[in-house]
Image 1 (cartoon, rainbow, N blue to C red):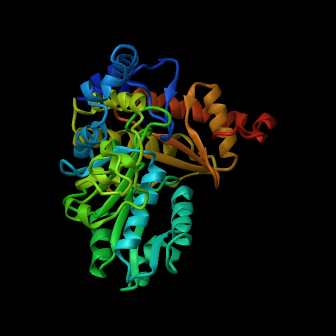
Image 2: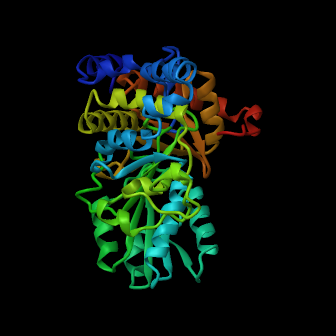
Length: 411
């Protein structure tokens, strides 16, 4: 039986334990949101205050030049690129993940003009499904979006397929798909592969270069800890960039934006996929988060992530075997991301009761209690204590309290 002392010993030997000191954390709270909002890095606060008090308040409009505001989507994109295995000039920070997805889907359909089918996972994140349907409706030709069982992908692949769009890590279960194998199978029929890395970037090692990934999108407010509403990013393989057209061209994607040319001329490379003005304050927060990631490697973080999630699952199985609770996250390390999901009746009440006890997870429909295992900030003793609180909630039936019948706007 695992003890808290065992966990404390593992914390003492943890090679990345000092990274936790970079974050503003309340030690009375165990933060295991899974992971809709990462905690704030102290460096993010410093960069935001500098952007407010020095660059904006003192530099005013001149800071577009002197503080590299204009080039920040590309500069920060190059800093984020190593986290997903991309090359310089292949990542752009701008807009939101949803906007980025819409642009890449539209660009893909224009590029693959002889094909009319888009495949996606029937259990994909709902925003992805909405965007695929929406872009298809407004295409200049008949596009069929098929929501499929991802395990039966081979049955749906054909020369009619223009694009396949999957999430790398399932937002409900935490299952991680095989980036290399699926991309190769899609390429075998001449289709483009677009990955949603929302639950991958900053959580698991990703190598879009070795997997020959065509396109990807992601957000920065989850495991990348850039704050609420922080910008999204897109990845476009270098060899594709000047062959794809941004379907939402904006003036900052123009080759010469300050010529104020009424006719759009795309900038070279990934800059052409910038549509609007970058959110400078939000970009400043991302700078701070990237400062922390540059103190370690994704390999180190992955080792700890797997250790944390294995511990969490082991403790649930050890201590909650008499409750009707199922770990739906895959046990195999190569098949899981960095959150663990439990299916349990009354899951919303379970999460809310835990929050009242200082353990912050989140709820997803179909009775899923989801827990993020963030290696930058979470300790092994935190995992032990969280499961201990979960045992008390379920043993005492606290999650069945009628006050949990009403759900908050954000779950």
